[in-house]
Length: 440
Image (cartoon, rainbow, N blue to C red; front, side, top):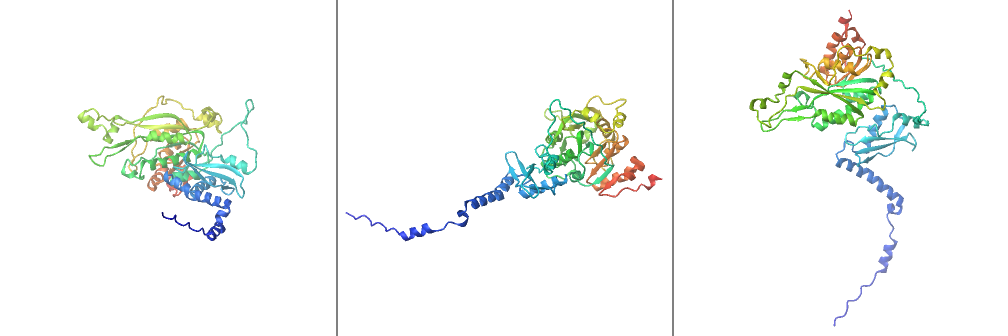
């Protein structure tokens, strides 16, 4: 019978050494250790969530930069500091706490759409509320039932006729809030022609349009109108083995308008002569073969989408509270007018621009959605058709265009449709035209 193995002696010296071993400095102070863990999470985890979801805003510094720009537009950047911005991936937003400079006193919160970096106005603390809290004022509460409200009066815009060379997304940020009474434009097509291939993807194009619509909302007066001429675009096939694609741009634009605080009012259809649609080549195959499934309607219409900046006030409020009641009376529509949403207008052509809309279309929009001496803005001005229509109907205009060659057309043609008043137009980013021959 074998003897059991002898027990190994216990090294009590080693045990004592183990007991006497000091913990690390960080673990000795649990408060400091928790702080390090929190800082590590904010430093690494938040950006990783944002990057994994392919957000446009991926870092805390990015969120702060956007917030700084937003505050600067209200001249609050030197009075407000930031808490720690956090990404809320449940709602795909960044939340940036706003605190009073030099203190921890919270005065509001700025909320960013994480996918496109746009400030969500409905969820962000209003600038006047932030200012009131900074100054220690008591915020006014809405009037109770039966309590009379102070009369409200719209402010007259003092903006003069202006032509701006530059990207409208940025130019709009420099304009005063609620300084525009009507916006009418036709945005550039999405890669429908070689000269328009400025966007890598359709999503990038829509993101640009949303930023422009967002900035337009800021400069448009309460309850006033944004009208956009837009149509589906046909992306031609690259080879006979591929199919062409038609993109329903108007329906995507509608979604952007609603998200940016506009109420849908009307879908007007600009109807062109029947032969105009054959230029696209759409429908020719069916005309030749007459096979089912090959049918494609020839497009002879474009959308004129009408939106109103969201407000709780009725349209009558804009009429009654207009600062120039004589202009309201002088702007009444007389004679014939369009009673339906079908507007039959011949298309226009310009030797130096591939896609101008007709002057008659712009005139109808200006007549129906503004008063005399109002300010009409076109953020994609092209050759200046909106400005020409506004001037002919005694309205002021702001034209923004990013292409120098189109600005040159505006400069060259303006004296012919504005005359001596051209000398009073403000030109930004470009030289004013020579008006010496006009003024003689």
